[in-house]
Image 1 (cartoon, rainbow, N blue to C red):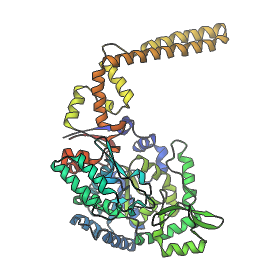
Image 2 (image 1 turned 180 degrees about the horizontal axis):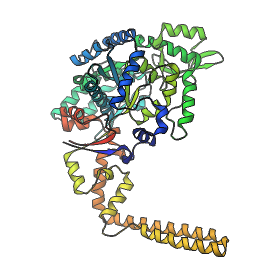
Image 3 (image 1 turned 135 degrees about the vertical axis):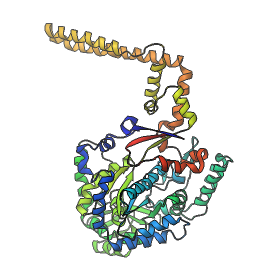
Image 4 (image 1 turned 30 degrees about the vertical axis):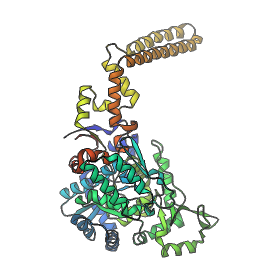
Length: 530
């Protein structure tokens, strides 16, 4: 096994916002609290200690124990749940949708990052406990985003009608999915393990939340992972004061709008707030709550309340109120003694929009950490890359740029017209000077001629490059096939490939190898050869 690293900026797959954050650019400082390094967790621990009380811990532990009643979990996970009663225990949290059979690989990387940061903090601050938490996005309703996974170039998809929160979905139709997937797996020992894992998760449970909890627990219980389903009446009772403020005063809307004005001066905006950032939740329904003409309404329904009626309903049935993408982070930080949220670039982008809102409602803002990103190569693939003289920077290039660079490198003729382009520009510089001294009306004609000749030179370069690609077709084919294996669909492997494809190859050593190699505080893209 070997590992190499590449800066996130050099991969070309990460936004300027994320790259600037990793470089701690000063212009981003107003949008987050403490930068993720071990020293900064000292003040984060102190701040969270002052805001998270004993009753909150008691409710959290009680609800977790209820959720784990039917789960055969490890002693370490049970120990971590019990530790949450203690005032010196804090959480490190990641969240993810309930993707079928974990979805793409970065599900694993998020959780491994969370486990490893908890370990690193325990070594640095031994008088405290740090619990890795996976927050299941059971209240999401975007079924089309989670109903499939990719396996060996095929899409394994669960087709069914879906309404309301996905966590409550029955598992109807997954037996047919299992039968199709099972045929693709083969007959190896690792294939049999995956077959049993899918069957146990999805054919032996009643809803998607239970199936996902079972699956994540099997994969990570040895590391003490605690899995939380926040779609829970007992937990939502702790959030009632914030829901009430949201209904009455729309604090999130005003705060996030103000932040967006400042953030959008240099970066794109990930999400836009609504006047009320809450959904109404019941069986087969998750719809936005609106306030119109002094009446609270549920969008696309006949459900409505006066102000006093909705507040009464909130206190009687808090489980009916569901936070959207703006309010969910606040809900998390209210019900968990959390220090850090670990997420992907898109997630961190919307967290940056929330700092002022957290200040407004007087809740500590967590440390934000970009999850580990990984490209996994087999030994055979690594050897081929070496023979073809393809570097890590090469392999991350977009397809056309990758082919063009490698063709130029291996070609026996020089297909780089930069010297000719520079010579042409120098000639026209002299012509511009001549026109300036004689008749300025010719400047436009000179400019047009320059553009025409530069374009012609560029076209000639591309035609020669195209011809050389044909000459080197076999080598180009081998290189592009290798890149396609590592970047399926011209996407990052971690955003496309399901863990089961790698499990077939590496078996039970896959997750321990990730645990061993992923350093959550190393802000570089990891390239592993297993």
